[in-house]
Image (tube, rainbow, N blue to C red; front, side, top):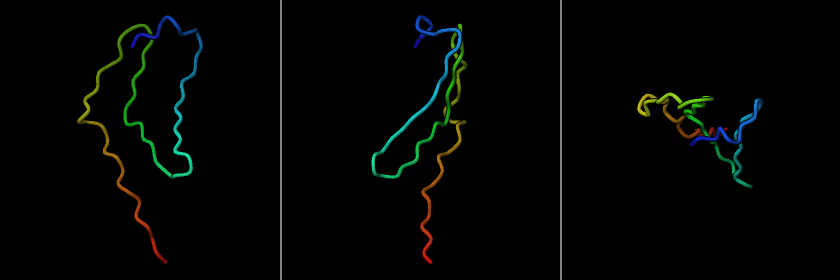
Length: 59
């Protein structure tokens, strides 16, 4: 997506997520950005695996 028409000289990028009252994890496994041209490509199969579910520890 070409966003060059709305970019300024200095801008910031951030990520946000919400689940309300529930607990959840959000992962960004790959992200690419480049000014003035196409971004580099990436191989989806080379991305890291998602972490497994957390194990509950009973005392």
